[in-house]
Amino acid sequence: MKRIATDYPGVFYREGQRIGGSGVERIYYVLFKKDGKLFEEKVGRQFADAMTPAKAARIRAARIEGKAKSRKEIREEKKTEASQWTIGRLWEEYQEHLTGKTKRVDDNRYQNWLKKDFEHKEPKDILYLDVERLKRSMLKERAPQTVRHVLQLLNRVINYGVKRGLCSPAPFKIQMPEVNNLKTEDLTDEQLIKLLEAIDADEDQAVADIMRMALYTGMRRGELFKLQWRDVDFQKGFIHIRAPKGGKDQVIPMNEAARAVLARQERAESDYLFPNRQGGQRVDVHKVTNRIKKAAGLPADFRAMHGLRHVFASMLASSGKVDLYTLQRLLTHKSPVMTQRYAHLRDEALKKAADVAAEIYRGHKKGAV
Image (tube, rainbow, N blue to C red):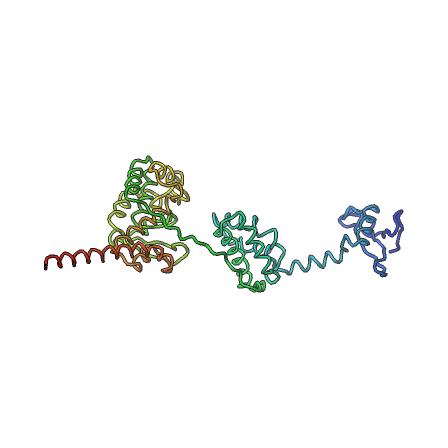
């Protein structure tokens, strides 16, 4: 095909078969010198790419100035990108396996914190400084626990690709920020009495029973939401907890207070002991629990559900009658580290018991005199 000049220097076209239609169309090219080398590049078709001589001239100027890439370079980049498993591409694959609340939460973390700086990076190209910058930036406005969640997500996405042979790992271990989340909430005897009174007085006794179960058994909110009739063995007196906080299934004993709460639940068509209004699994009770907390006059930072789990553990530890290993089993902690937060309460109870022994000895000594 012969070159046909246009009114623009360095821009010409050839005529070829029209794509997607009958007849012919112009195929535009640009001709220019750069670094002493002559280049001839195709820039587009008249109809397929809506190319015009003026548009081709602008592309030529941009190529000369180094502000635009050739079609060949763009194709090569796309080909390279298609073979690269960047964080963005890995995320698209990884998030397909997420569901429900987990998917929403992780998507927010990725979109808000990881996408901008990591989307186009392969794990092997991530620098230690990249992660440190993210940590410093986040810590200016977010708690260490939030930063930890975001970095853990980055780790999970990378590990997802590595395990499937899609990419190489990051060249370093991502260090998590220190998090002191061992907050232990407790109530005084007076506060506990007021809470129980508020629970009894509230109009929503279904949620009130969930709070009672948290207080009587130390079960987590999510475990109570998932609790089904098949998980309760009234005959043997045990409650089956399925996948407690990502761990293995556990069985805890059913005390008399918990038995009374469970026994009065109406066994309707739902499989759940504490179903929502539609008979499905509950996902939230914070409106009612916060109302009860307010009615009881509890501190603002007391967590209405998780705090009851701490109260359960604190009462047992303070009694001096329950060792930490037993407490760990009742709380379904995977390791004794989390249970150690209650050690000082048990130590205090043992100290009081020792003081009682000392009083007895002193009494005997006076009697002997």
